[in-house]
Length: 107
Image (cartoon, rainbow, N blue to C red):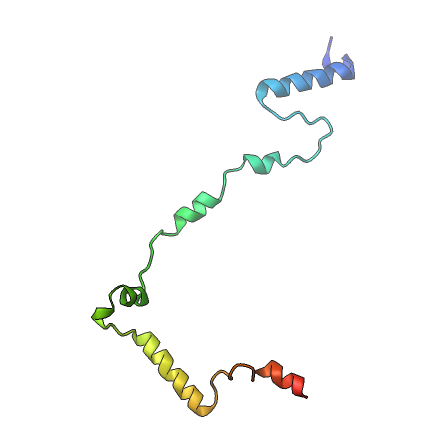
């Protein structure tokens, strides 16, 4: 007896048994199950291992731990100087409650 002359019920039973033996998912209707994606390797560990896991210590943390060293952060110092210069020219941030939104309400 060849496979072409076998009844459909026996073929589906044969397919079900072969799936059980070989560890495949039995899916007679051909519905999408997402099995292909679930079998793929996870990407997360590869991405995490690409970037070094080094914590950078900032000068602010050092000055907080040891204030007796009197360290000065040059970047912060220049930032504050720039801010004071901008305020002198009237380009600094507005006072609380006097921003753009409050001026729109007055019109």
